[in-house]
Length: 273
Image (cartoon, rainbow, N blue to C red):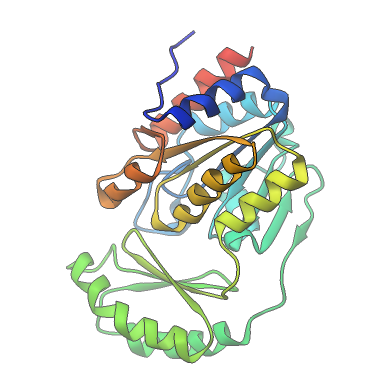
């Protein structure tokens, strides 16, 4: 049995202790891209780290709830993750579109919000705005992500697009979410923090572990801190990346990307057993 890494904060150490003491009342929630799956140039080619799904399956049998909270459509994350038809993951919940969508592995049911008119309007205007940038558009249905990772100057393209995309979002009542070489336009009012808080309350969790890698995960890390104030123990895990180094100061434990997340889940499963 491997040793668990030691969180750098007192609250994080208390969160880990609570998780180990009462796994049957624990909620483990994780981002998808950059956390379970390495970041790749083409979002459609994203797949979990080879050790991630087996580790999730082992943990799922020991804790109250396992969830994936992602900006992707819930059904897309389930497909790319290989979660559908995996018996050990029957209790998995995928909260997509920052929590606006929900897919449950046990039933295969998908719940989605109605289309947002602003997304349709932005969809029509985005190609002209991004034509000379080298960026590509990922259509998520009820959100639009503009990636600059393939551009000749990814950081420069991201900086150049930030102002026009902010204006586009404002014109159509959308939120602009920055990330790792990506700017996403999405309906306002939902974020990973709200999704995590609602799931923790729904399941009456006594402890919560959340793992993420990007700026869109900050609301979830803030939600863990807020839940601690209500008596729910929490552990915030950063899937470490040089691209978003500032996350380490908002978390209790940093691991080495998706490989480190998979290793942490595997070690937790060993300790639960």
